[in-house]
Length: 184
Image 1: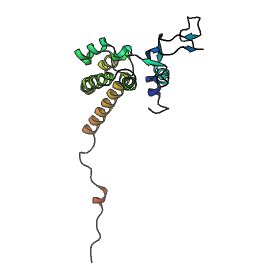
Image 2 (image 1 turned 45 degrees about the horizontal axis):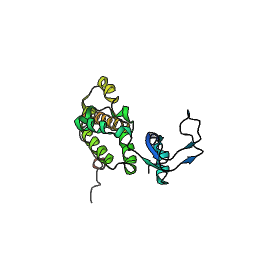
Image 3 (image 1 turned 90 degrees about the vertical axis):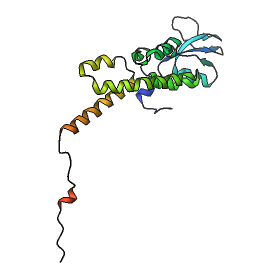
Image 4 (image 1 turned 90 degrees about the horizontal axis):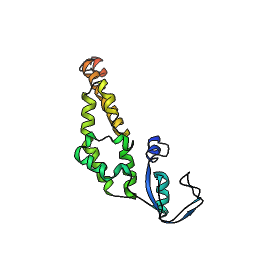
């Protein structure tokens, strides 16, 4: 479980997951267009993950693989992970994948790990080498976690350049500036 007050944790759990109900549920209206106030057994729907997790723990539903982790996405990531637009599929791809994997398909964890390893070096490389004009184009394809990593890499590079260009190379310790009293 993440931090209760962490906004990124809350937003990561807002993504919808496909579910299948194991039990009939009365007094629930999932689809606003339907007139019924119940859900039949074995019916399928999409629920936010925070709700689906609670219902899954009560064994009322089973969670299916979300669209952002489907077979097509897996094939694209295996072909070239760096060119896949993960932000359009899921803004919190890594965090959401870690949260949903124990409930539906354990291989999602492997996919998330592989994707992060494949994209990590590329994100850092771009953060250290790309100019400001190209940065906005790159940022459109990065997930929230990758954006944080990109910004941290850019700020560390800026701090390194500032340190390298400015100030004296060696600083004298203040204790060395004091003279000893002569021994008598």
